[in-house]
Length: 238
Image: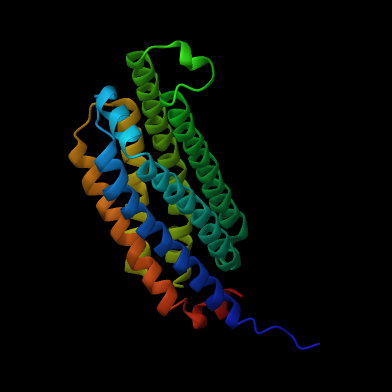
């Protein structure tokens, strides 16, 4: 039996992670620009409910986009773990587990979106409620979903910062890019804490930090797809 080419493995895994990051980026832009910004009206449950019912297909497309994001998170985190375990396996495993927790909580927020549709259609016991009560209940579900995304950000901030630290330490990718990643994901952690502690914070803060994060993940995805990882540095650890 021919021995596997160990030098090819990190390149393959890097490209898998890169493609997953690109999917996360484009699905996130699709969801934010075409779904969330058009359907969800902050502080106005009635208008939000009207938008969702009037554009239910668009809302369901958003659900698919979010599911695609979290599936891609699992794939990217798995591929990065296989690369980074050569640097420090225990820490790489912790990063993977934190990102898996992110995906699990994220999937739970998707279930809340299905609950919103169920309520707005008056299914089950909720059909005893009036239209305004149904809209209010659906709005509360949306609020809970938003809070769940703050929890998702905490797991992103912790898990992805660990991965970027190991990329920085190993020099598998350029150190400035890895440092940018650490800054990006620590800012996500900061944003989550601000959102939990100060729910009425300026929305501009989210816009700026999400833009920085999305740009980083786009650049990282492209780098991993076209450049992979430094095989010379890989050889030192492997």
